[in-house]
Length: 336
Image 1 (tube, rainbow, N blue to C red):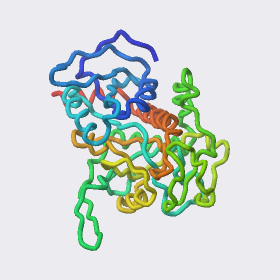
Image 2 (cartoon, helix red, strand yellow):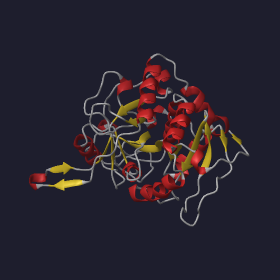
Image 3 (cartoon, one colour):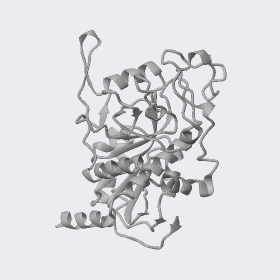
């Protein structure tokens, strides 16, 4: 990435990249840019956000993040509320960062079908049901029943078509994830390195962590681990992504039983996070989350940078499937 002296107008940007967790998600997002632009002029009395602008394969991209410690749906809504007005021609919005993995209810014999730390979950199940579900918005009824009423808009058509092509390219071995990941490793190889396989440990949902936060489960009972197929050494270093439903809410989930309850309530959601509903208040988005933990009491920070880097690499690879000239033509048509 290079610093470009180019300065575009706000109206020239058509891709919004939202990375709410500044200390983990902003750096990999910036490393995906081909160059950074000078800030465009905008009304800072109305819009208190600061943006990072640049290009990815011809796409004019604006990156936004929340202040440190100010994440969640409310702050994501505040961030994007003014952003989408300042940049009026946004046509594609991606929400990129980390999330908690929800293991599949039935383990697969193929380890590539299971959720492992460092995998990427993309919010699109393709089954006719909502891509993202607001899991704690609904009606509590007698007998412990809960009726969900909080669903979100589907992502933009252009992003979903590109996702279909990317999935096909992955099947045919035509993706270039290695090139995207190389952008992270040029200067920050250690920061985004994959932790050792023994640090990817999925415990039974009913077994609670023993010891302090971040202790690496040194005192936890290995007999309580979920037995499932392990990936080969080659598979462990590939970028693996899953398409599925994502659950969003207002809580940082660190309870395996609660996690599984959310997964079941949301039609088999594969990931839980805290910002998608806030962005969706202001416009549809495609949610891309690197799995940094299993949303249980064994959660720690070890996988966060690696997972965030994988999510950013996936987002760039996806944008590379979309012709920027098509986006520019559409933008001009919509401007009238």
